[in-house]
Image (cartoon, rainbow, N blue to C red; front, side):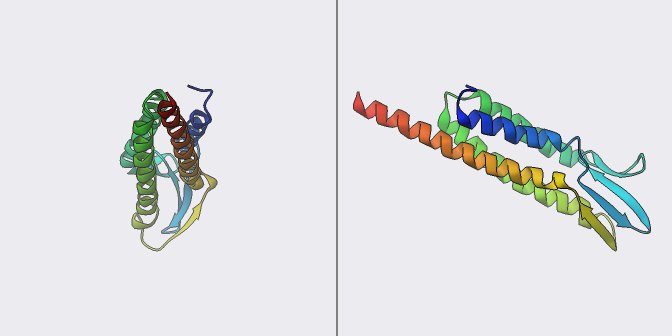
Length: 147
């Protein structure tokens, strides 16, 4: 399972998504105050202003799908479908980033952090995993024709 390159891609993509919980996503300056946007919500100091429950649910689903893909290594077509669905969810994650950053406050200035690019890196790694799984599937089908 882990000796395949697509497993490494999937593990790295999952690591990027898990790291979203550890790093802040943005600093929001609104109403003369600084707010910290994290995966768990928007905070003013230690006080939670906006709950990040939808964002955490999205991240939890993406992490669970990555684990499902990782452990269904014998079913390559299912892996490809789940990875495509995961990519769609990560694109939706950018929509949630936009909602939490821009729709939450009036007249705000936002400074995004490096962690916002983690889902993009995970999308690229998932795409590379899909290509590698497709190559494996083509190889297995070609071997079946020879027999």
